Image (cartoon, rainbow, N blue to C red; front, top):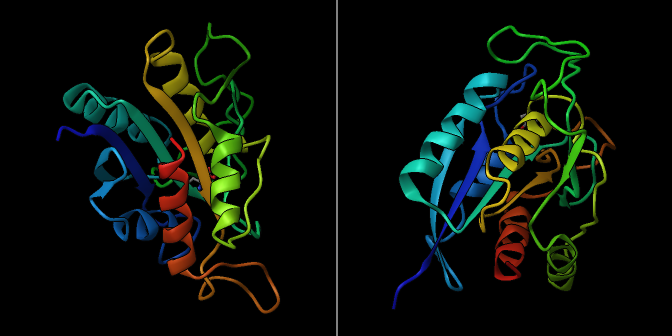
Length: 197
Ligand code: PCA
């Protein structure tokens, strides 16, 4: 049986955290999910380098789908992103010390691209597992949105399904009373989302 190829990435820790749940969850996924064989990678929380690394891997692997996963501290559920916008506007420096303000991700690019993942089916599949999930209409204006927009721009017109999923803080990261999600639920949720691809 030949599998389709899925490139799935998580980020390294940023913003003073010592862990990033996105890569922990990606690491915990099985190597085969449904009709997809997974290639997992940890990418740097740096504007330029994150995108370069994913594009380099995609050129090598020739994936049928690319899902990038990132941490969205404060959110309570798993949130597939609907849209990437052509804006970089950071409120903290990335892991390379770069903090762009009011810049475009791609100088002559259009304003926005929609994710080409089946985002609604993914949300439903995650919720069916009893795990909180909802669509998100903003991936922010930091490294995650930049990556989502730039990948959609770079691979526009191809058949590659591309998108981004944010996950909450782990319980160990969340301050008293703040939203978080156990790692096992993130893994089950991402697996359900991939089965909906
Ligand atoms: N989350 C950040 C960048 C890396 C990550 O995991 C973001 O939402 O932009």
